[in-house]
Length: 117
Image 1 (cartoon, rainbow, N blue to C red):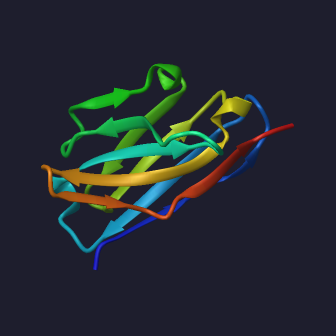
Image 2: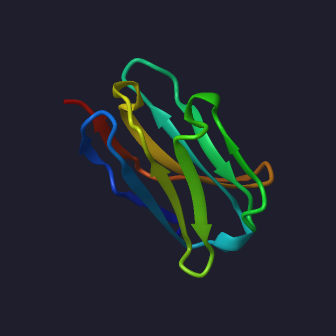
């Protein structure tokens, strides 16, 4: 059974930091590219960052570059998203995604991040 379980969300003040984690099970984690997406109320889900199966490749949405860092630990089947200098517009539900090819595409349940004073 495939599972992606996100954690680490919460309420943080503007300028603060959070570290999200996503623990995977039920598939060969090291063979999958991993991504973080987010969805704010009334908006479409958008890509935040991606990392290749062996961490060589990373990609970030323009608004996250320099503030967010994606990383993975294949030994722990975990992908992380370090978020610094958070802004109110970063408020959203953050989702973990695992993808391999065109057919294997898995999603977590999401974790809420709220940036507010």
